[in-house]
Amino acid sequence: VFVFPVATIRLGLKIEGRENIKKYKDVLDDGVISVCNHVHMWDYLAVMKAIRPYRSNLLAWDKNINGENGTLIRLVGGIPIPEKSVAGQKAFLKTLGSLLNEDHGWLHIYAEGSMWEYYQPIRPFKRGASMIAVSNDKPIIPLGFSYREPGWIRKHVFHQIALFTLHIGEPIYPDKTLTPKKREKDLTIRAHRAVCTLVGINPDENLYEPILNDSKRIVYYTSTYGVGYRGSW
Image (cartoon, rainbow, N blue to C red):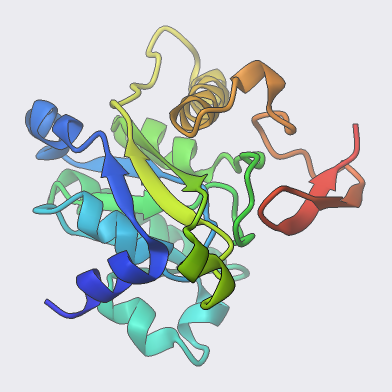
């Protein structure tokens, strides 16, 4: 009652594509994974509002859940990602399988892996979201934040850089004609291209390739709305 209106005002939020929630109700009722660019500390509240009446769980780094915002992350359905424990990773994947297949839940993943505020290009996706989707035979719902120019009061009085629009896409299914590894790669690429398209970026002209390559050198980059880093080509 309180959080959604405050987040909507804070972000200047508009939501587009809500009709897909109703259109694909049968798909969503069977368990689904969503991916999205991560561009603001409050953007998950926008996701939660956009997908109502569904409630999602969120993958989060365990250090964040154990940090100062840990209680809030748990309250919104945060699931810690174990980084070092093999046993923890097995239990983690089993939990996700139960969430998707037995509870038919909604799992949200920030496939870029980190937050860069007000960043325009869609950064490379890690393959974890697609791995989970393929191993559980679930579709991915692409979501994407784009930006609008703020009015004079927001810009000059509250110093707001941009207003947010959250776009909801249509489900993307794993290609079962491919081997599991190729299926993961293909699904990652198609999900990345879908998010680019949702936010108004031609996938072929996006700054980044679709899949994260850790061998890329990182260089400084400034966008129209914010500052971040990019891999050199």
